[in-house]
Length: 155
Image 1 (cartoon, helix red, strand yellow):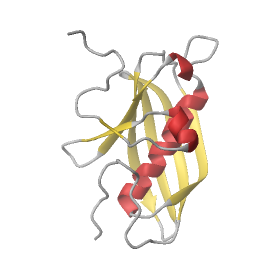
Image 2 (cartoon, rainbow, N blue to C red):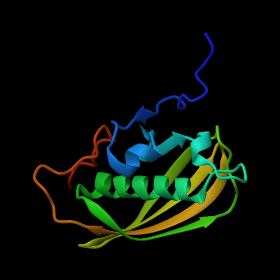
Image 3 (cartoon, helix red, strand yellow):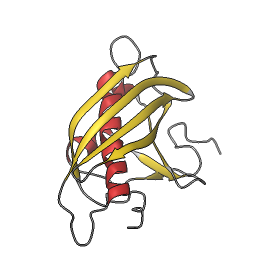
């Protein structure tokens, strides 16, 4: 049997299908790592590219905006909204590549989250991302992205 070229790497779980723009941009995946962090990813397809034969910056930025927000929700157990997202492109990726987002929550305040992410196409760093998210009021039960990684237990 021939392996599926669009299949994610081992351990990745697909987010449940989402409506709206995120649903059109994905599908997106996640996997828990041994150190308790979560890695996010998607398979770049031709539709994620631009006329120059590389991935469109908008497809990478949409992915990172989405997963940075998911990670804020996972760690804070609160919905959030993007205030600012900076993306610095350092290389190009090609359709067919596995795109990975590796994230690091830098700082939390009572109403804001500051988070960074590195975007890789296969194993090549293609973009650096810096986000600021507004934390929305807590909900009971806490919001969890559909089919996403488990929330970090509350302290």
